Image (cartoon, rainbow, N blue to C red; front, side, top):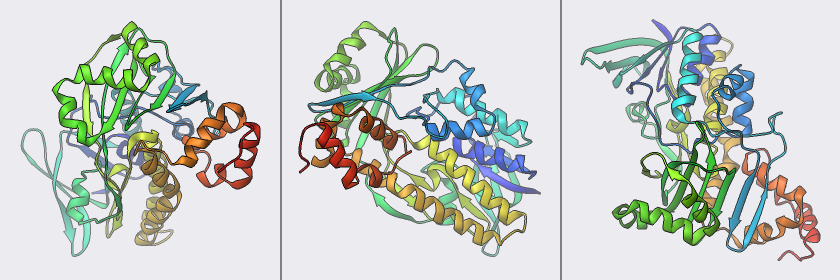
Length: 402
């Protein structure tokens, strides 16, 4: 008998399993994959996520893997172009974009070190129930044998297509359709920091990761998906030539080192994320477009929150149902501003107000820093776009706000 079973062993799952095991709970974590195994990802780890790794004693381990630090971002939209970086957030002055094979392994090792029984190659088929309450899982291992395990709490951390969510009937809400797809690969021979360039219904960019490689990506609307796949190499380079000719020239000076990964983005949504004996975390409970690169950091944030609330319930400090309901309410409240900002930005057609601001930013290093702090989740859009702050920006640019 376990205290907790976690389904999914990547960023959210391995993290919540580790945190609960560190509190002394008996934790089983299962994943249908056999690791190491890559995952479609932005790779981006913002300062808030890095601060949590630091607090868990894992940041130095990540840095020791040789991931290149990111300390500058160049961004453009049409004729607006500017560069800068957020000031330190939670004491962290840089960001990183680790390969998922490296990051996931680091988290899984930390979970095992905390005492988690982490089993690979287990596919969850059903949930065990006593009346309305979930009390365990039924799965199949890699040899085809059925596995039944019991626990006081089952947590689904198994991605946006979550099996646990389907088996519990967890409903989605605040759904916003996904409108884009991405293609990316890794280049060698480049020496660039973070790039985010938005053009005519497409965006391109990149940032350094592990092993001297640079992740290079493009995003386009889904109505171009079929045509794009007819000649990925040509269409990928064309996107750069149309959107950021300077980056297109830079790509020609390097060499693509791996195959392309192509993925359509699923819809944006929240899911009902708790019920009798179960909870959801990570993309299983809350998914948004990767455009702002906050997915991994959010997975850490809300895994931490869920671990705390689950501990309150499992320890008897408060009813488990009440604690899990509080987890979902807090998650929704704190994530909502960036959820809306991300969904709006990912349409690749920015509001006129934002374009005005971006054109003015080169005149004010202070506001440029604020902009990137907002992009990193360290400043709310309400604070940045406050009337007094906008007035100061446009005064610095010698322009009037519309």
